[in-house]
Image 1 (tube, rainbow, N blue to C red):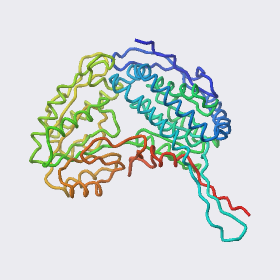
Image 2: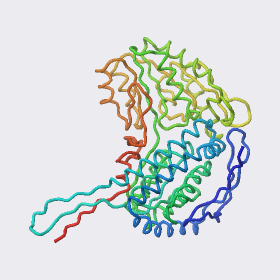
Image 3: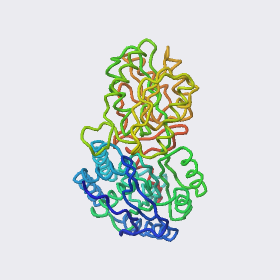
Image 4: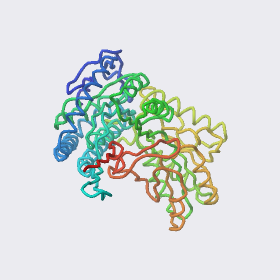
Length: 476
């Protein structure tokens, strides 16, 4: 097993030990300390802002063709290092090694997508009303960006922000989670090695409210990108509004899954288990509220529970592991509390419902049946390996229940009816809807939600637009 790397800040093209408080980074599979690191002080943050300002001037002057070459090279480096970066990710985040490697490859795809899309920030010429003049519309990088990412996807989420900003010609200060910093640092190092100039990409660590206040309030920062909780997003949005500064917010979800009685129940349950227990359920677009037609409810519950019980839980570095630990002790307590609350409200525990062992943060894949809407788990995102299932009777009823929460990030539905599929796609309130499939995200498609699940999009052409401003030039 390769050694866990030293964790540093990265400011102005160089690694730097922070001058703030010391923190410990833990292995969620063992609870052991992997490393210690120092957070950024106010001086470090000011230096990062100065570096990002200078880096923006340098990076925006690089031709789009050269930027394309550099970002493609980042993708090549990530693909070549997927084993090493994946092992680091598994050690600090917990997900199985195969999932971690896949995430690194997906991150490479994001850089490759923005490498090409950055060449397509086209403007246009508008016919002038006056002879001898012309009107030109151009797209330009918005400026230095402050970006904040959580611990559940420590490569892919930063990759979306870094590649989007760099693809548009912006500089960026990225603040990953202090629980999973080494994965993001590996991305930054790949960018620097590929040729991203000093200061165009910077990494800081620190207390999220303190860092966000310092960075977002600075006149240097022109745009903010945040992925995290709805509460955290509101706080960042409030800071950005004082600018005002553009903010992209990808916040919490609680994805409903609607399973009708005209599908292959066992096949859908098998797919559902794969997606529900991926990354131990710590996925913002994971299926989390399962509404199953009463005619097939019992069959679905049996099939899902059977699939859940076959998942091998253990250290993600071991072979054959289907689910690793939760990322931290906080998640253990939160998940178990929601399961106990559901049972108090009358839900039936079909399988799981308990911690596995007393070393690390392992929790058994859990299935709950006949969960009433009054149970907290039907309104609070569990962000863990628990699948609550409820019955429904008709289309209007289940759409009303699916849309009943203030969040709307992702949703899924399975039906054999074409007309019903069309109605579901139109009536479900979510930023991303999967009909007869759980695959809803790719580098080339927009990712984001509606209502309290955020504002703006990452990925696709919309993701590049978020880092561009439009200028009209009237020339005589």
